[in-house]
Length: 628
Image (cartoon, rainbow, N blue to C red):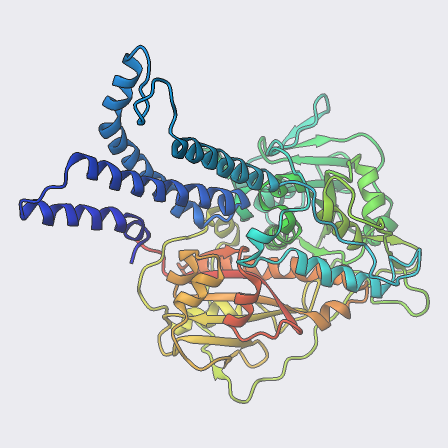
């Protein structure tokens, strides 16, 4: 039953009962109608306030629907309440003095006084509980108990950070009532960053890029298709890549080396004006940027202004920021290829040194990724060298005490510092076909304009009830390219919750990229309601033809050559890269897609039969035919 009917059901039942009594000639007296409408009003006020305090205050987006629908019901009942009681209030105010129900002038009955006192206490408790959100009440130690002083950057400590942060940032139904966010994030910062009083270069429109020439126009096109404004007509200022809550924490900086039409040096990309702003100071040294190929034309440094996402999503901020950035970086790689260039991501770089060179406040904005852009054939970072490791985890404070709380501490735990040698990278383990898997059709090759796909990409939240052709699902899955060596991490796994795909029984399946097949994970059964509930009751997951559930293998995260904490960052970025391929693959086939990062972690794992001791769910994505 639709939400609006659930919310209106008490009103409809009351109206039906009144209609029946009217037909029987037994219309209730005015006082009875007043009492029952007041009780309904009290119930709706409590529902609206409860949703506001416990859910909307915690930024659970799907509950906004229930909140505003109960709000409409409350307004209706308030209007009815005023109809009954405004004359009483008017007569009371018109009198020179009040007469209490006991008949004594000015006396207030005890029961009225107790009711007023109870109401004030309830209001105070609700206010205190609401204010509890955003207060610094919870902390996580940087090192597990028994860790020697100075060993916070050891691999064991990094793994402990990952384990505890992931549990700390997980959603649960009870968590909303039992926990408060660990940081007072304050108000939302400005959505755009500008540097006043510095030279600016207006970039040509993205369509002006020339294939095969990595000049300022082509680089501008790559930047626009990574984080540029695709629709500035609404308050959301939609960008080329999706973002949780349309908050867009990502900022892009360019270390220009040999780009015709662009002076060498440091630049900041202004998506609002599609321009580059010249920054003072010297670029970071090559050693801090992961030893890029000398032939690199430009290095793009991606950062996050954490508060843009944190003021809304709180302790889950780093998860959303990393997945959002993964989406943007996949666009960067695709756009670079479309203009005849090549881009790869450096797995290792020195965040602290790079941030200092860019003049960033590490308590507000963190360096998260480095992309090397240049001609085709650009050398990727070297494999791990024998002997002393070239990178070491940056030291982390002993407790979460900074302005960003656990988000800032976890960002520090996933950061590196250079100690010499060559950078490291990782490779994907081979994937053996599952013997009981259901083979998928590869789908017909799709030739689409990659830049146009990025420019027109939108999240679709309403789907038609039509079943998805199996060839379309197979084509999108094949486009994820999971069987190839990954960009940053081999940890990402993909499950598919099938609701309506031609030739496939509803249920949960694990995708085997090596055999391009689906392996049943649970007894085939309809999972729409379970999928919707796991995704915080978001209809987009329950109404789509199928939902992708992306998880990360904890052993692969722990085995990352750069340490478990860095492996955690790499895995989330990789999940974002895969998520954007879902968008682009869907768009190329005329389908709709929508990424979802909010879900109940335990329920999401149970949905697809995942053992949380081995894997963590990190991302959802809906796929289907968009509703007309």
